[in-house]
Length: 79
Image (cartoon, rainbow, N blue to C red):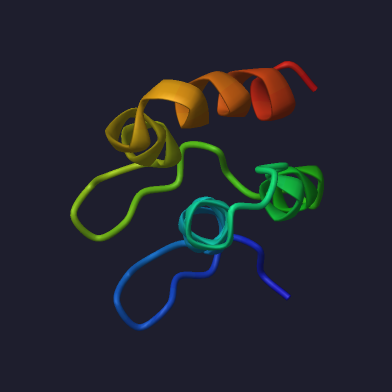
């Protein structure tokens, strides 16, 4: 499996995982762990991968803001 593959809308797996994990955390009031994001990075996903519109994981984290940005820094970037 190519962990840097994009879906039909041009989203890399890493960005799909980030968006899904944050949405799940918000909608279901569950702890945000970024476990799939961390796994994809360990498997070689490019943290700078871009969607077709040029947005990266850092752009999405910034758009979510607040606690998501803090948790991303703590749980993903500090690993």
